[in-house]
Structures are given as structure tokens and as C-alpha cells.
Length: 416
Image (tube, rainbow, N blue to C red; front, top):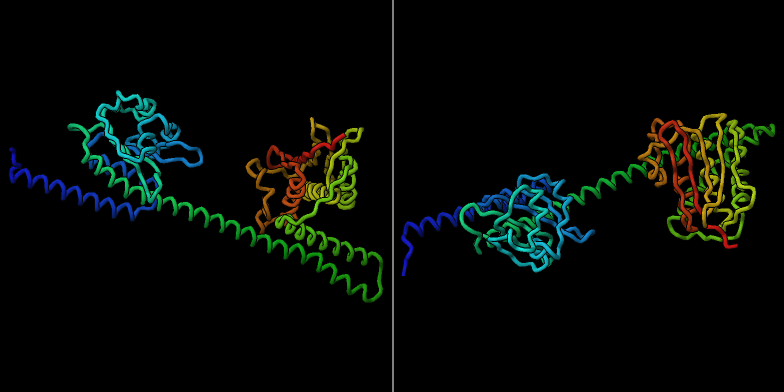
């Protein structure tokens, strides 16, 4: 029976000590690194060194679209690799992931589960492979693989070393993901707080202006003066009531407490109700209202007051962001089983990347401290809420800044 020499035993102990030291160093480094991309590169570099192999790769599980994808691989572009879907049911990595067990193949290129598309992307022909699951608690989050042993074949010892590396890596990746998610959440809260702060500033300004008019003209009324002064007071009070109504409507929408009383009405009559509300405001700015209606009535089932309010908000928006003497077109037409109505202006337009954001609560394209146009930034939010609460849709179209805007509303046709 062959007995290892003392020199051989000493070399083996030195090798184990060196390996343990390297694993301890890896653990310390992983726990002090919270950048996910940096972590992934560190893991595959360490795995390649420890197993003395040609390359290593990390595949993570995509929970939203159940599959594995390459998060990192030696000498490869992570973004390009991530585009290669790795099937869970018919690949080597998928087998490791499903069984949650290590896998050693020293003739991997001959295995029917070998996924040739990966070899083409990493530009490396795979001869031998060892892979282990990356698990944290009771959840498998991915697979760590090493390929092409430089000297000899992969052994159980290699699988054990890779498993220890994978255990450390899973914890570090999970921590980095949690940090990234926390940072994104904090950034979202920061933006939300800024928006609310801007809203409070705008509300204060918008309410202060008509209040100043009321107080100023009230002094004239005390001395028994003209109807003209009284009209100014009434106009300012009406402006304040509109602002407060908008804030109340937004609160009701957010709490889902708004009661909808739907009746059958033609879209032409509905738009005329909205136009009657804003025609005085339009006349003061010398705006021309152009109608583009079909002659035959087209009917919808809606809450008249609330749907008219949605169009009033769209019309006010068009008037506010258009120059004096401009033209606003109001139209409607039947399209299949829907009625599409629109408000088109020739005003300041909307940047293409802001077409969705303008419907968000309190959102203003202008910076709050240098704005030229009034409003609280909730008119479009209310219009969207009122239309969608009745099963309709609303959207904005614009070719960009300075090129005008068109707001469209689609409502279901009333049954004949």
C-alpha cells in the first residue's frame, strides 16, 4: 500500500491553507463590495483562479420572465450575453438550477444539454464544465459555472470549492440587489417629496393672487362703488373655487369615492357644455374656437358633469399654453365602437419624452421658480382619472416643443 511522503503531505497542507486563505479573502472582499457589476466580475475572476480553469460565468434567474440569463462571463460583454436566453428545461445550467445539485462534465461538448449558442457568444469551445447552484436560504437564485480545466479534469473537490464560492456570492449578490432597490426607492421618494413641495408652493401662489384681488376690491365695495369692482371680486372668488374644486376632485379620485351617474348623451352636446364653461376665458385671450364635429349625433353613456369637467380641464390647458389670438380646434368622430374626441392647440407643445408624465399628479414641465403659466399641475391628472373611471382612455400627441398639442379621449359608444 502506497503511503504519501511527508513532502507530499506538506505540499497538500500548504495547498489547502492557501485555498482557505483565498476563500477568506474572497468572503471579506465580497462583504465589503456593494456594487453589483463589480461583484459579478470579482466572483468569476476568483472562481477561475481557484479552479485553475479557462473561464467562469454567472447565470441568474429572471423571476418576471422565467429563464436564466448570463449576468457575467470571463472576457465577454455582459450586455450582449444577457440577450442570450438560457432555457431551464433543456440546458446544462437549467439542469443544475432545477435539481439544485452540482454537475461535473468532463466531456460537456458531447452532452445533448450543451447549449451551443452560448459557446458562439463567449467565443470559447467548452470541453469540460463544473457547475453549482447559487442558493440563499431556500431559494436558488442562479448558477455558477467554470469551464475547461487547464490541467486534468474537474473533480468533486473542484465542485466543493465552487460551491463555497457560490454560497458567498449568493449572499453578496442578494445584498447588492437589496441596496440597489433601496437606493431606487429612496430616489423615488425624494422625487415625490420634491413634486409635493412644488405643488404646495404653486397652490400657495395660485390662491394668493385671487385672494389679493378680493381683499383689494373689498375696500372699494365698502365705500359703495361700482359694479365693475364687484365683477372683479366675483371673478377672483370663482378662480379660487375652481382651484379648490380641482383639489377636492383629486382627493375623491385617489380615495375611489367618486360617484358616477351615467346617462346617454351625444358627444356634441357634451363638448358644447364644456365649451360654454370656458368660452369667457377664451374670449378674454382673443382665442378662436373651431369646431370639427360630425353632423349626426354620436351617443355615449357617461356622467355628464364629470366628463364635461374632464374636457373643461383639457380646454383650459389648451388656452393656458397657447398664445393670445391663437386657434383651438375641438372635434369628435366615431371610430368603430368608440367615439374619439379631441382638443387641438397651436401652443408650446410637449417634449416627446414627457407625453406620459404630464398626466402625473402635480407634474409641471416648467421649473416652479421660473414658470410663465398658471395652474396647479392637476388638471390633466383629474381629466385622466375621470375618463378612465368610466372605462375610457386619454392620451396626448405632440411633435415636440413649439409645435402644438392634441389631447384625445376615447369613450365607448352607447348601445343603439
